[in-house]
Amino acid sequence: MSRLFARFLAAALFISDALGKSVTGVFKSEVARQQNGQYITKFMFGGDSGRLVCRLDNAALAMENEARLLLFPDMDANLDGLSCAEKLARAQFTIHLKHDEHNQTVPRQSSPTLWHVLYADRYTCQDVVTLPSHPDVQYTILMFNPDSAGNPLDHFSSEEAGLHSFYFVLLLAYFVASCIYVQPLYQALRKGGPMHTVLRVLTVALGLQGMSALCNYVHLARYSRDGVGFPLMGSLAELWDMIAQVSMLYMLLSLCMGWTLSRRKPQSRPLQWEQTPTSTAVAAGVVIAQGVLLLWEQYSAVDSEHHSFHTQRSLPALLLLLLRVTLALVLASVLYQITSTERSTLKRDFYLSFTKGCFLWFLCHPVLVFVSSIFNEHQREKVVTIGVILCQSISVVVLYQLFLSRSLYWEVSSLSSVSLPLTMSRTNQRGRY
Image 1: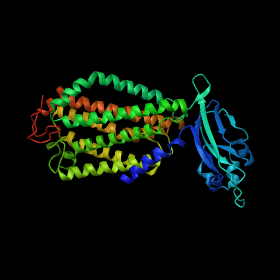
Image 2: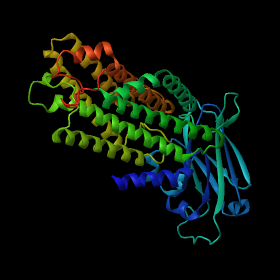
Image 3: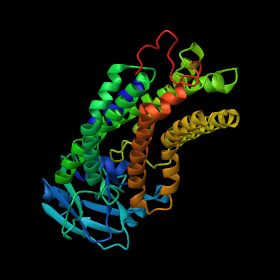
Image 4: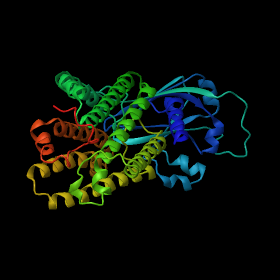
């Protein structure tokens, strides 16, 4: 796991410069020959005319090599079986690099379209020709979509448009909520009580999500100006969110282990923070599994933009979705066993409220990935990213209200000292209101 985490950070820190929409690098004839065209980057141009700008440091050498940029819309796997010449011939249009700067207008499309940019020259498909020893040509490529005024000055790809504004509104909501609720929450944490650990974990998770939103906003604010942003901030945003996911999962599993592992009646030990070796091992095992899958998913998505939630159908992403659905099904089964035999209306309401928060946390990502398939391609990433963040924030609020509520929590806990929710031990009962 540590090796996978190190590889993820290394990829994020050292190759992220090529992921922005202001791309700087060198055209390599050798790489273009090996790959049947050197892959440069991708960009989703909007329906209106976009713009691609290519600047060269040695236009004379590029012209001598017959250098050109090839643009492919929605590059698919069928190109892999073609010969070099056939693959290059499939390009939608070609930009011949003869000048220091080229401005290419992308034709108007009926809907946003993802375009892939490749480099090729006279040596790309000529395997028998010896490559010359001349230096490589350095380049800078800028890609723009039309802004609100219709001018091609927007660095954001179509699938990213609107995320910057969303994170601003989210941070504003976090700030307003913290100003209103930070004092009563701080007082509740100072007084302790049987729900102290849960409130502490919820606060940490919410704080990490806020840090993730802040890092994403800083990255996208810079990205809107130069097309590169702060890749390190984007990587930190994903790291904070992964830690929040792991901490929330461990808390929810620890609370539910008394239901799933107890051999007595399910309602005899409801909603306790289990600290037995078996329950701790199960919770830790599931948490480690999710952590590995999250790192694996992020590492497999290093060629995409910085988002904590992805819609790609990679193996780790599918396994992560399957894990969350499985946990939700286990929780639903336990809830049915408890509510079918529980006579107390207050207890049933308490369990149902808790389960709603858990369901929202576990199922929002799988459901949104499924629902996003009905949207257009440029909307899917935004639907999943924005939807998951909002749903998980609502889930945290539901759990906060449940465990901070005097009217419900304390009436339920006063029914029976044996069934106190979140009872750490019988000797640690003095920190109550």
